[in-house]
Figure (tube, rainbow, N blue to C red):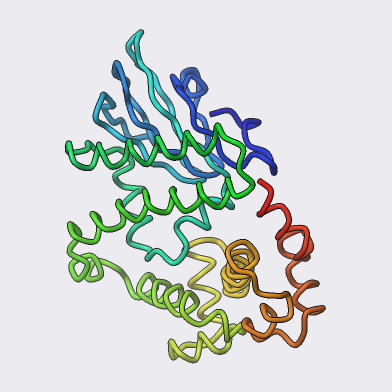
Length: 279
């Protein structure tokens, strides 16, 4: 779980780990990490909140999370899956905001016997894929990670009373969640801030105030992030031509799409498609 584990050619790792990188000082995560406690015990301080961690427990944390382990038994051991931010985004694409809020508030949970068996089976499949030669390794593991997250997503939806949650939100939080919901559904066809502000019946300027206050980004930055992610998914998981992708996302032409993508993603369309197929 060290910062130099992940590379462009190796966007994930699965291994036995004592999580020792977080023993002496807080470790700030970049990407996604799922750890299953296999043996021993530890105290995990996640974003300042202590959690007990022992066999049968799972930790799920995302980018920006602080992890410190002030206490652990001598035999403490986990199975750790650690992935890049890009893979994480692919895996939890179009999940609703309450999922991330719940995970932030409950990063450690105890498995039942049934959920433990299913999770360990998925980990075994990831480990097997990690160790073998496979040109589609990156895609296979992204799908397996999505399966793990979908299982958590389902349990959270079943156990959370969403109407009560929404009642506790203030007006800006409600508008922000509606904005994200609409961007998720309509970014393929609508790329401009004015469209979403109009659907929310507020001004673009006020929408910008809301998004900057809640997550520090402008509405355009958020729309672009979702569009780029759609492009990455199409490049990775479809055999559409670049022109077909441009048409699907309503860009004027392939050339415009290419310039837009390279400016935001740092790679050409073909470079990204090639890297996705060979990782």
